[in-house]
Image (cartoon, rainbow, N blue to C red; front, side):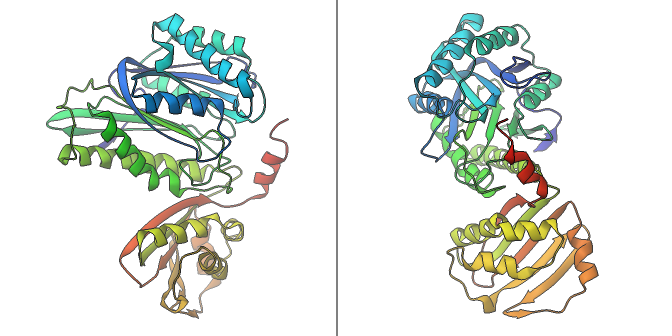
Length: 407
């Protein structure tokens, strides 16, 4: 497997386009379209929030129906959540616009929205946006990058990646893009993500692979503890690579899962680092826990604690905050077994050793914690399971961004 240039348009048969539709933002692109030149099998994971946006419910129906999927239309600025019948009407109008322009059945077109909850989408602008994008779909790297920028809201950087790998001697490509900066908390995948591959694979196996990988990638990030109404991950596989179809869990299947994991973890970490107002990536790595469930619970508790996040922002090696978060996480452990370290590109420093705080050089700790990415490394000494979670620091700017987000 190797990382290659590009994103959602990297795989054969995938095109993208974007446009400035004026949904909410002015002077920037705010709609994107992803299109497969042939029908694709699809898999998806969606928010566990009971309050689901209209677009989420629309997409869930397509994925569960077993119908092929051939296009996704995404808008930023307005979330189309808590919008009643008008919200579903907007989904239908958008997808029927694609049907009219591209001849793709409307019930094979997914939709996604991100932005302010409770506002109605301007349907006429959506339809006009679909019309504009249909005429400039392209498989170029630039088209994919522009699409990844169009779906941004409070993101400060666009997020895209692509890899190539071999299946039975045939080159296969997987590309993707995502957005997410706020309302990020593990409970499916708190953001929007779109993946396209030219792999030939059975739908049920694609879904199983996606669900498995989400558990260890997007479900292991947090920014602010809020699980969005709009969380959506969609993966389309159109089979144009020409590999022997994956119809069982064989070596080819696990090769694909490795590539899928790399792509999803990379996008997830980029999203965590780009949390609203964030200045650095905050990683928690737990090893030698009793079980994977415990390791996940502990690592997520560490990166999810506001006090821990504030300490990371202040470059304060206040290790008690991280131990405290572990203690209320729900995982049962003996603090007298625990070792805790701070790590970054600037060095490694142990600060807690099996129930006992260690004397350490504050200047060395400050140097380590000033890096752009900081890891809290915890050795539980109680088993052989591990997990890693990602988050970001909590800065003054997070409050500034969210205090006036609607206006």
